[in-house]
Length: 183
Image: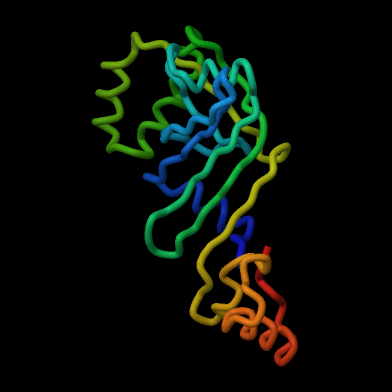
C-alpha cells in the first residue's frame, strides 16, 4: 500500500480541518476514542484536553495512546501515531500556551471565530499534551495515484491466495520488476 513521503505527511498534517481521533485506555481497560482538534508542530501532535475530560484522566494513568488523522475523500490519506502522550502544560497553565491554542483553533474556524471562541472559553482550564512522533510508531498510507498499480492498495497479508488481486500483485512484481508498495 502506498505510504506518504515525509513531505506529503507533513503537508497533510499542516492542512486545516482534519480531525484527530485519540484513543486512550480507561481504568477498567476499555478503549475510548475521542475526535479532537490538533496541531502538528516541532515533530509533535499536540491536543488540548479540558480539565475534566475522560481522555486526560485516562492518559494520566496510562500514557500510551493512538492517534489517527485522516481524510474522508480524495486520496484517503491517513496517519496513525502510536506512542506516549506527555503533558506539556498542566491544567491551569493555559496562559503560557495561549498562542498554541489560538493556532489550533485557527485550523478549524476563521480567525475572528477563533478569537471569539478563545475569549468565551478562557475560563475553562485545559492541558496541552503532545505525542513526539520521533519516539512513536508512525504509519501512513494513501490510495494509489493513477500511475501506481492498484494491486498495491492493501498490505500483502490481506490478499486471498489465488484471487485476482493476489495474481495482479504477483504479476506486477515478477513481470515488471516494480517495487511493491505494500506495508
